[in-house]
Length: 198
Image 1 (cartoon, rainbow, N blue to C red):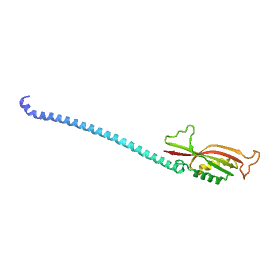
Image 2 (tube, helix red, strand yellow; image 1 turned 180 degrees about the horizontal axis):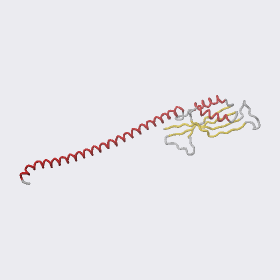
Image 3 (cartoon, one colour; image 1 turned 90 degrees about the vertical axis):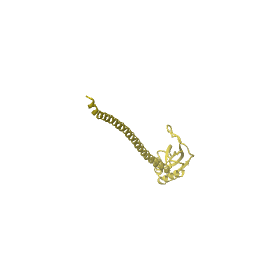
Image 4 (cartoon, rainbow, N blue to C red; image 1 turned 30 degrees about the horizontal axis):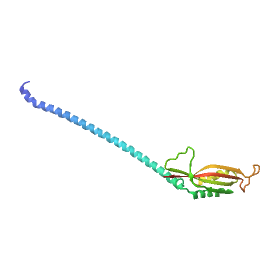
């Protein structure tokens, strides 16, 4: 190769090499830009998925809140939550007795006290109370006792528990039951339960 050829080839070779360098630079820049955009895209997808998960959890929490709020309102309306509703309990007892027409029924509503049972766990800030009620009943037969308790359960939504009940027959076993007077006496202790959440 002589000097004349080099003079003619020098410029194209330089342009060719320069084109290759520029092309490599552009390819490198494009690869870098593509990797940065891919990383930004992956971050955006991750953020979108996280936001979507939080949104779904929020919707689920709102649904649960609505369910619990509805239950809370129902319990509050029925008297399970809040203060004592002594008048409602007495009215319920009287309404039930109007249906059963027991020969005699007396009650004694005692002061409210803490409600506790073995193994019962109460959350902190929640007061579980009970109002004991002593019942004394003259009945035609033993089914009247169960009818009274079932009538109470159906006539009022308050929660009550039966602590104890005793049955005593007024006449000897060999004497037939009278349909117009009390053949049996029953004494029961029930507890009206109320919940106070502070």
